[in-house]
Length: 173
Ligand SMILES: CC(C)(COP(=O)(O)OP(=O)(O)OC[C@H]1O[C@@H](n2cnc3c(N)ncnc32)[C@H](O)[C@@H]1OP(=O)(O)O)[C@@H](O)C(=O)NCCC(=O)NCCS
Image (tube, rainbow, N blue to C red; front, side, top):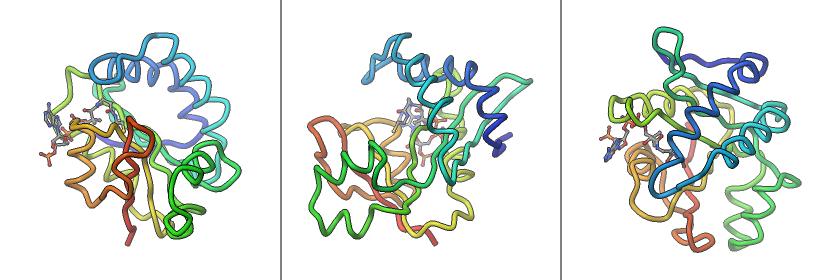
């Protein structure tokens, strides 16, 4: 079952999330190692969970975390927003960046992928958000994640953002 959890619960679950992250991003096309998963955990715990509008969705089975996703309100002054703004046309930044929902991460354990968990996490994260726009970056080449986003109302704002990723946007109801 997919649940939204608050900041404190998210911090408590961070070690379990790191295991899911390491498994999901440890394979093609990402090939991230354990150190990168730990760096992600620290950023998540120390910085991301404290951001305004933080929202985290978790799917558990028999107490075990099988997948998670999260995001928060993005804005100028944050690393990702400033970096993206430096790479895209000013008109695109003006339309999409600032007070957007930043869809930061989505990961499901490889042994449980293809069961609809990623889609359920995605839908839970976006349901009822007050933001007008959501943005994310994802691998530029064909991946399950990319297909998931394209099937769920996202479109590519910039196909080639930085050589390896695309910038996606979605208008929220
Ligand atoms: C992206 C991810 C979270 C999807 O999780 P999931 O539980 O497998 O997703 P679902 O079962 O809900 O499938 C959602 C869509 O993904 C696609 N998909 C999922 N598994 C797939 C597979 N093995 N092959 C092809 N497409 C696949 C399908 O298009 C599916 O859409 P549909 O239901 O409309 O056909 C998962 O693949 C993952 O953790 N990937 C590694 C981490 C990652 O890329 N995160 C996103 C970074 S931006």
